[in-house]
Image (cartoon, rainbow, N blue to C red):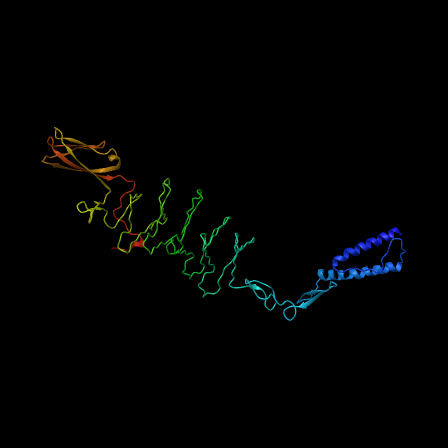
Amino acid sequence: MRGIRLRYFLLGAFVVVLGFWGAAVTVTHEFQAGETIRASEVNQNFADLVNAVTPLEVFRQQVTGTPCGVGEAVNAVAADGRLSCVAVGGGAGLTQVERDATLAGNGTLADPLGIALPLEIEAALNNPIVRVTNTGANAAAEFKIENIANFNTALFATTNGTGDAFFARTFGTGRGGLFRVDNNGNTSNALEAVHTGQGRAGFFEVTNSGNSSPALEARSAGGGAALAVTNTGTGFGATISVTDPSNLLPALSLTNRNANASTLLVSNQGGGSAGFFVGGVVVDGNLSVTGTKNFRIDHPLDPERKYLYHAAIEAPQRLNVYSGNVTLDARGEAVVTLPAYFEALNAEYRYQLTTVGGYAPVYVAEEIRDNRFKIAGGTPGLKVSWQVTGVRRAAEPFTVEEWKPGVEVGSGR
């Protein structure tokens, strides 16, 4: 009998546990210690338990299965755990979803939820308000205008602070930014920077000291310039500077691999100078001009109002000219010493002698040897002006006449 009472005690405990359903489970018969238990009473209590558990099983079947049909939604849960369904899209059921101004629609089939346009999001956060991440192989975000009559920008960024309006960075091996126009008939700029304040319209910097690549590279496969700089104000068209005093490289380096084209073309169509250099100019190669090669200085007699020009002497040979004065000794002779490099630099020597203060049949008694030559035939104390011209030794011959390349034929002036 004790074993039977223990089993009934466990059944009672199970009934108490079932109280989480929110409804009391009532059995018809209660048993006390020492009482005689009838089989019919036990059977009645089991029937009570079955009646209490049945609604739970019905609810389980509805939740784990398909409680509603196609086009229906759960409307309510009855006390016995049964779910009631209702058709959506009209009539009874869901009619409104509480939302803020960033969304539009009621959330029903007839008026589904959507993003309100224009979308305005405002928050006081220390982190980005919107973060878009794509772990796949395509873009994280795309901004596109389909209307060909729309002249506005697909992406517009502004800031009232001191930071950047737009910032792009990559930690991979790709570009930080790419601006591209794929329409062959499009004459607009792929990238345009406009600044209405006091700062730069663009700034390019390489901060890695081990990076030997340029901060800015411009290339063109078409017939236009790879880089065009225009200033419509009163400043320079371009300023190129080297600020590191230990940097011995030039501020501007131009390279051209076309043998028939100029590396640099500077044109002034306003009548002024095409170039102005403050400081020395070094030319590693030939210098050809169509005009005269002059010096220009402030006029020594009127420096405040005038310039003085002198033209260079020109010849169909590379000539070096040396000159000076010498006084003849007691025998009417003199030895003229030339620079130590003279014979290494020059060949085909030419001489000119002119007496000063008197006449004498002076002549070159000994030609240049060991960078010296001898004058004789004069009188003691006579002054002689001398000039020696040499043809510069050069690895390549000096071409006086040449045919014009094809692109310049017909351009005679």
